[in-house]
Image (cartoon, rainbow, N blue to C red; front, side, top):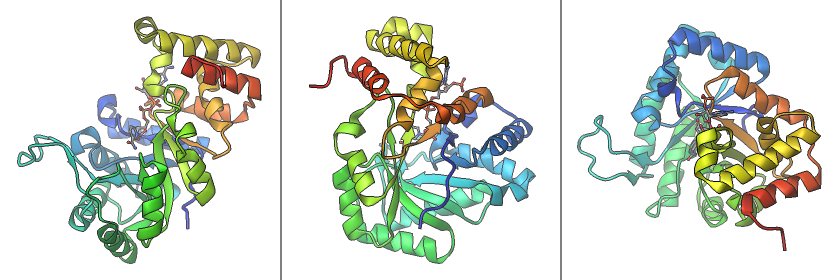
Length: 296
Ligand SMILES: NC(=O)c1ccc[n+]([C@@H]2O[C@H](COP(=O)([O-])OP(=O)(O)OC[C@H]3O[C@@H](n4cnc5c(N)ncnc54)[C@H](OP(=O)(O)O)[C@@H]3O)[C@@H](O)[C@H]2O)c1
């Protein structure tokens, strides 16, 4: 069964860059909970393997927070890192041993005894569904992980999982934004709808590039998307940032954005945008700006 996640998820991939104190982070988390943003997205590798520990200090300071929030973590990527000098090439590892070791470290770093959602970070060409099943069953039985999903999986990878992995695959986190509309057309979101898999959008505002003058100057496509956002925003008496989220919300697969800003006011925009209803022409106008051509 799916865990009840907040519609807007806060992504913590950049937590180390924010250089916030534990107290700053605690304040941010409290404000987000008040706003209804209760789900936090992490991965074992974020911040050169440090992000989960940074967030863990928040949970250590306020243990009662744990039951008020949901934590997503990911496993399966192995980075080149000073932390692991024996690793000489970035690679994927979805072996039973790696998955279990990674989750054990995640729980230690986060100072918790369970995570709500575990995702396989990327499809691994060497993945063996039997081994993944065994790892998932172990983690479920021990109460270490409540539910499972995948990330960056196309429909054929999800289909393989559905058939061969014993635990149900309930979520798929993929890149979706006006910058990257692939999942709308390559069968990924169709498969999610067919199989009732919850889609999460990473980089929902494309890392903020539409809203940065230098990025707009550097690339014509960024400027084209930004100009369309501005136009649609005018018609709705709102901001281009709000429209970028409203565009995602209109998709029938019910996309949950994973918002990566470290600023409360910017995360709030994603929540406010839930009240904006774009019509079909707005939506296709933005799609045209993204792709550079009309639908056939
Ligand atoms: N599954 C995967 O493979 C995968 C891959 C990448 C990311 N993720 C997850 O998705 C989350 C979100 O990714 P993301 O951070 O790339 O998403 P994002 O929300 O599209 O981008 C956030 C970035 O954009 C900047 N930004 C937002 N609005 C802005 C504005 N109006 N003007 C200027 N800058 C603005 C933010 O800066 P400020 O902080 O200054 O606001 C931040 O650096 C991550 O934290 C992670 O949890 C998952």
